[in-house]
Amino acid sequence: MLKKSRTWINQHPVVAYFSLAYAFSWRVGVLLIAGYHDLIPVPGALHYLVSFGPALAAVTVTYVTSGRRGLSELVREEDRNEKSG
Image (cartoon, rainbow, N blue to C red):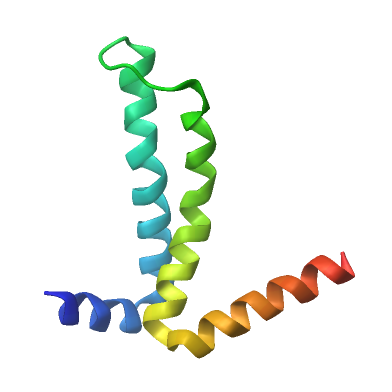
């Protein structure tokens, strides 16, 4: 199963990114909705985790498609963008 997932992500990295970003973000979002309706107790600061969904998806897809080298390049590029911006 894991090998099939990796193969699919390698073949469709953009679709995989958006799918994972939504999945990671909405996993927390569903908890927030349930908390809003008093179905379960939810800490107030949990909403901050929703914003990490796209970043976590980017790291996941980059690692699967490019390995550790890709992650190193992603971090270097982010550092370069922070210094120039």
